[in-house]
Every structure is written in structure tokens, then in C-alpha cells.
Amino acid sequence: MTRVQGLFAAAAAAVGVGLWFAFTSVADGLQGEYSRIINVHVPSFWVAFLAFGVTAFGSVAWLRTKNAKWDRRAAASAEIGTLFSGIGLFTGMVWGEAVWGRAWDWGDTRLATTAVMFFVYLGYLALRKATVDPITRARRSSILGVIAVVQIPLVYFSVNLFRTLHQTQSIRPDGSTMPDEMLMAMGINVVAFTVLYLALLAARIEVAAAEEATAADTRLAGDGVSPPRLSEVEDV
Amino acid sequence: MSDLAVVIVTFAVCYAVVLGYALWLHFRRRRLGG
Image (tube, rainbow over all chains, first blue to last red; front, side):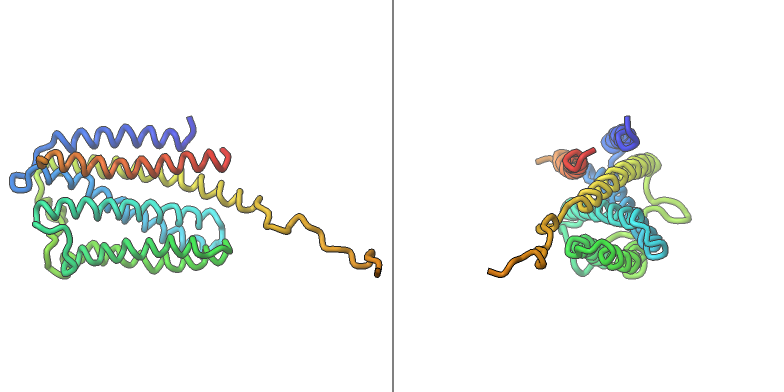
């Protein structure tokens, strides 16, 4: 079994345990079954924040060392973070429709900043697709990767800075507003999603390395054609 | 649809997306050789 396969096996087991706790833990008295969505919603955004942090770290490391492995790590992590941001937004909308009576509200600071973060990282991925030269691509995306990470504290603390629709954090330095059973289920799912992130990251980095190796082997049209030796051409 | 059914479908959609991404990585790695 390879390292990636081992990570995926661990992730499958962890996600299975997480699902068990998500559906057997106590449901909230007011929200009912919809409160179970927190077991996907919060772990998804935890993974997104972690992934974008790794992207920023990899970006700084590439800018300092110019080693391609850091660019691969940063880009792989950004792709996974964007995926989990999308999942977090989707689950939040399902929950919001049922509990708030609306799936989306642009007037809410948490929702608006999260949407902007999602689109900025989609832009990061588009920027990489649009740039052919690997050095230019790495430089441009590293600069964006460092700038974009500023959004994480903005998204996280937005509920404290501007009180709108989204509730404040359930876990605070002075304790939690959630029952212990719900908190444990959510914590187990956070751990499970972290293992899943590590497995996806390892697999994505391998694919990126294989893509680069293939690109290096690919000859452009005309590469195999030698220029004519004009000295050997006879006038007719 | 009951509340629990909506929640189960929501979970299923999320896990299907992640599974689809993992499978895409797997087959892309194989196509590139490895």
C-alpha cells in the first residue's frame, strides 16, 4: 500500500466514524435534524482555512527558494480549499433556508466575505490555468496566495465585527454554547475532514508532479524539424 | 421530504463531490503514468 492509499484508507475510516457520530448525536431542540449539517459545514470551512493557510505558506516558501515543489503544494492546497469552501457554502445555504428562512443574504457580512473568499481562490485557480510559463505562473500565483490569505481572519471575525444575520462563534475562549455531545461529534468530523484533506493533498501533489513531467516531455510542433542547410541548396 | 431526508441528501451530495474529486485524481494519475 502506498502512502497516498494509506492516507485514503485512514480518511475513509475517519469519515465513517464521523458520519456515525453526526447522525447518532443529539439534535438541537429548535433546529431539529438540520443541526446535523454543522458536522459538514464547520469541518469544511476548517479545511478551507487550513488549506488556504498552507497555500500562503507554500507561496512564501516558493518566493524565497524558487523550488517548484512549494508551488505544487500551494496550488494543490488552494484547489482543495476552494472545493471545501464550495461545500461549506452549499451546506450553509441548505441550513439557512430551513432555519433562517432564506438561503442567502448579501447584507450579512459573514456570507458576503465568505463568497468573496471563494471567488478570489477561484480566480487564483483561473490565473494558474491562464499562465503557460511555469516560472511566471508560480510567481503570479504565489503573490496572490500571500495576499488572499488576509481574508481568513476577516471571514472568521466578521461575525464579531459586524452583527448581522450569522450567529457568532459557538466555541469561545470562555467555553462553548453547544451541548458536549454535539461538540464531540463536530470535533470528530473536524479530525476526519483533516485526514481527508491530507489524503487529497498528497494525491493532488502527485498528480501535479506527473503533469509537470508530462509537460516537460511534450515536444512542441516543429521541435523535431531541423532547419534547412542553405549552403547545400543549389540554385536552379 | 422530511427534515432528516433533506439532511441525508445534503450529506450525500457533499460526499459525492469529494468522492468524485478523489476519483478524478486517481484516474488522472493513472492516465499520466504511475
